[in-house]
Amino acid sequence: FQSGGSPGWTPLSPRTIARKRRLGYPRLNRRGMVPRMMLQRGNFGPENILMMTGALLTSWTREDDPHHVEDIDATSVSIGSDLEYAGTHQYGGPGQGWNGSDIPARPINVSKDAVEKIAALIEQQATEEN
Image (cartoon, rainbow, N blue to C red; front, side):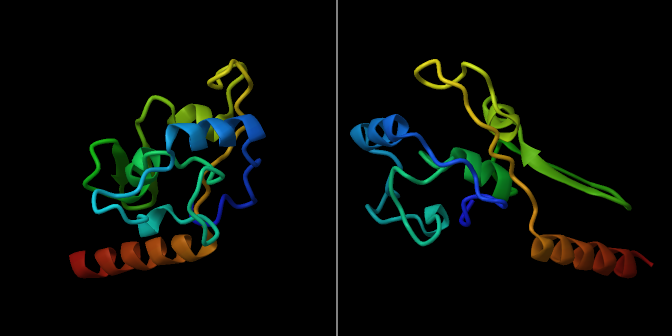
């Protein structure tokens, strides 16, 4: 989310940016400050992709989020979101935009660094169990 996709996600249309700006998105936190997690490429504003309320972001990144999905076993890790619109953003959706426009796929991919951290955690867990 913070890097704007890898590879980079399709930028928002000018109409979407204008709509988000008009509606006051993305939102500041309860203290009126920029939520650090919602910075994208160091910026916070309506141009940020897949960030309005932070719900999709936290559903992917916080284990305590009610929409976080996680399945870990001896050989694999699956992490995701069960928010109804998560699949549309992952795979794209024809005619599903707020104005009937197509939504381009903006897949959430796990970085190489994250894969290495996950592998280290699995290895640590396996060692502790034996």
